[in-house]
Length: 182
View 1 (cartoon, one colour):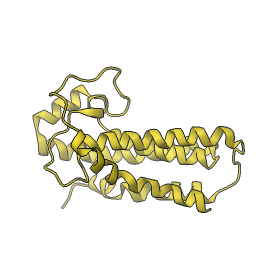
View 2 (view 1 turned 180 degrees about the vertical axis):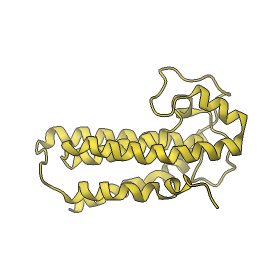
View 3 (view 1 turned 120 degrees about the vertical axis):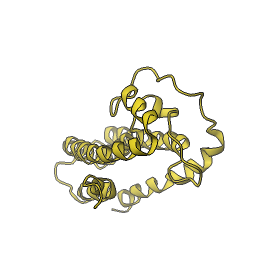
View 4 (view 1 turned 120 degrees about the horizontal axis):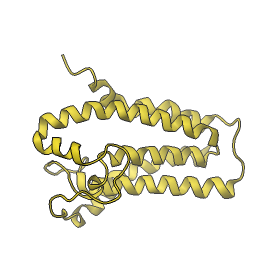
């Protein structure tokens, strides 16, 4: 029998979908000053996407390359930059749609879902990488980035992975299509 927390890992995307759909289709209480909501929402969305790309350049999650314990890039500041990026993207979409009152709900949905996901991932990665990962857990915060980076191994060469990482993360832009069409 598998680890009970693995279900959170497997369903992490699906658990957020209802909140995303709510933002797309609910229109009561919208903030209508687009001169404020659109730039702020776009900045949040763009920051989330940029963080995901930066993390991908170091993690190589969707890339066809050998996986190693990632201790470079955004992982020198925080353990879960991709989930933080996802949260920024979803909050950005919420703001773009003018549902400012829903921002705390979206934040809570992301916080709960990704926290439960990370509880599984940390156990899995501890078994996979051993003491090196335990040391990483002890030095790098889970959610709130450090002010200064943790001193780790020399910086990885990320240049060769830039375009691959961009391509691997372009699917995030699909989240914007319903905003444009609806």
